[in-house]
Image (tube, rainbow, N blue to C red):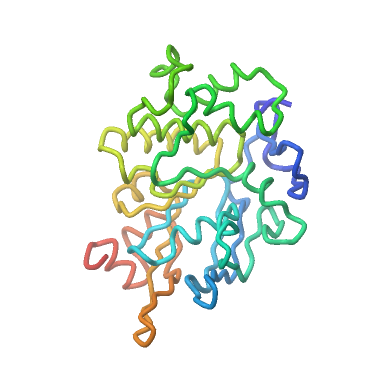
Length: 291
């Protein structure tokens, strides 16, 4: 079944199947009120240290949700919970609940590999594989045993990432020869190639120049009609430009142990957060009084 034939309003969810490519339907638009994620009372620990506590929020379909806040407030830690990347850290554990279309992502029957097929991630620093541009895109689909036309899938993914016209004549060349901005769009195309429903972005433009940053932001605006996007950013203007919803995190400092625990202060429509936030801490941050 091709992506164009799929619908998203009644997803076929079987996160326990490790060797079956994800079937996340996609052709009929789903109501934006339908939640993709429901987070309830989430806390994240590294050993005995609680890095983030008591986070509750809902992420809706086909919207951009931005996580903002000062360094060390747990934004990336929370982001990594959505596709269980924190599982790769031996001392990390999660308490509370993250439900994806009503399924507890941390249920013992849920396979984290299948989760990551449906919920892709783009990291702060571009990390193309030391392979050709073509093989970077084809890598995930090959592992997922994609049975369609690989050339078509590679082209479609690069077009969705607004990179096709720049690389179509050098697909067999090394991805390491691309500029930083091109490498980041290649990583986005690589994430799109596995046909996820959700894309997590951890400060995807922080290492890029303004022109490349603008292209990444334009790309988010273009693809949010097909994908749910959660982005971590330190750039207030970027959050205001690209996101529909915004979550502001800050850190509580324990003076005795000199540790910082992240907390969610406010979660609302981006326009509301930047024009009339309900918490003075949010207002102080978005107006530049601290952070």
